[in-house]
Length: 270
Length: 270
Image 1 (tube, each protein chain N blue to C red):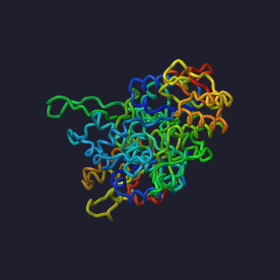
Image 2: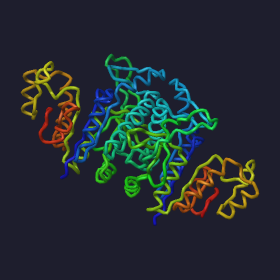
Image 3: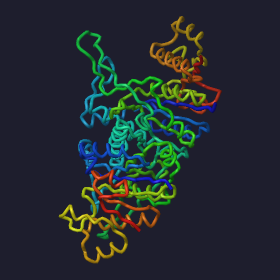
Image 4: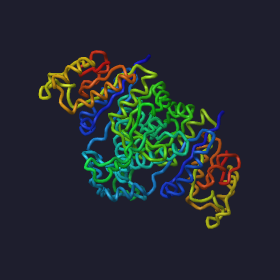
């Protein structure tokens, strides 16, 4: 099978003009097929503030009400996505900007109401989409890749009933990587604010090069992993069990190294 | 050659939720390949007002400064385009939303400074893109059409140097129609606020069914056409001379009739 890189960049790259430009220069140099998934960054909050849209949070999660879904659709699918596409075109990469609604690529399910942990009423997350691997439709993405085009996804999906939904960018990257594993040997790369998974969170030189299931059990046993990284590693193993070849967690600056076999970040394998 | 409809809807449909929904229901019923190009409507101005972006006009044309190009990129490529795509998906049409930057479909040229007619200095239109038929790149659009997907274009192009440009939606429709004429027998349909070109602008029943070059000379000689329609008809003849089979100007409500041979609007032929 042909190789494919599915690469996710987060807000820390989107929000830094210099870092984003350097990243996109590297992305444009990738010779193998590649897909980019971007987060939104802080710009949605900044524009929302100007528009008088008040961000509401319940249990640390932003509620995507009517105004907020319009805001993130404008900012993620419009401003951020099209700036990335225009920049990649200028760098010689034939990019195409998409959401999960385009080509019906990622039909999702609106998150149901959930009982509030306090027992006091229900939480309505609003226009948030949860998606399972098997919901992803790959024909349009595969046709684009085969035409030499690099799809660039904003973290939005749709409910099939005419509504755009807000979906976590890590999840979008993961479900695309899994679904495309039927057609390609997929490496899923999470660009991260650190050089990889660190044995010591205060020491950037303590990158753990390789995590397989045995090593993971050992690290968890030794309580060496900080709490925030554990769900990311669990998700990586889920993606690998569902067909992804390996997952790399590393710094956006090391993109080109992490595309090749000589990774500088943390490689997670099954 | 296979038939293809290139359909443009303007702000009067975009701004009217009921009319837009009815139009999209009709669009989703089209059996032949079709491309949609939409204008922006008044929503960009409304959101711009909230963001404190002051629209500047010179000689009746809006100046697209840095803030304004970000605004229209958000609104046209984000909000309007993705709402249309999600609505079409719900109606069973596999739509994909694009700008001219996506797939490098419409590389354009930033409009040069122009001497002010008053003789007093130069006019800088800002991030406005002019485009010629031969600049359009059709491979990605053709691949999508052949995959059964309906491209939906926002009226934005790019300069190949990393900038999105604002381009008139009628022009985007026309250059796409001409470029795609190499691969398809193209009917270009302008959905309009009237039922067609009227002999008497106050009488909606005075639609001129067919305009060929001889009829056009006759109508102009009789001074029956109101000034605003003349550039539209001139542009239609330009598109026909460049390869488009015919151009229909009609009401968005009559879309399905205007796709078939039995048009209800005005058909312009060479």
